[in-house]
Image 1: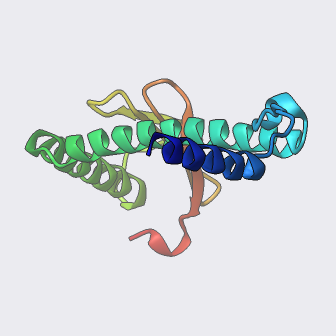
Image 2: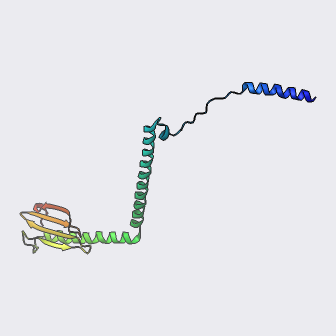
Image 3: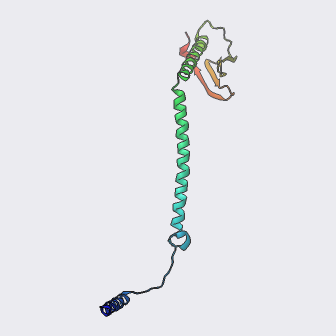
Length: 156
């Protein structure tokens, strides 16, 4: 029996050794950064990923700033301030137009008149040659609007 076991083991060893084949081991890098194959597309992909990430960061920052601005504009104090400014400008524009277009005004032609709003903006106007000239400057002194209107049909 011992001999039979040795014979079976020997036969199995011969069968297994016949099917075993050996080859040369060759290592290749799979990254194009090391082997050079497809390197330019690899670099372009990396650049695109970096550009997308930077753009996403900028977009997220802008979205956050826009959200903060929307939140601020939805507060009652902002709405109150905006409403008050509108009413002040409306009253000021009515007073200016009344003084410009009424027959009984005390305006001297070719003379600039100024009015300053509580917010630091300046409105300047002058009547000359049947036209009214208006210049609006913000609190920094930058001209925001400049226009002229014919007096003709507006006079009472």
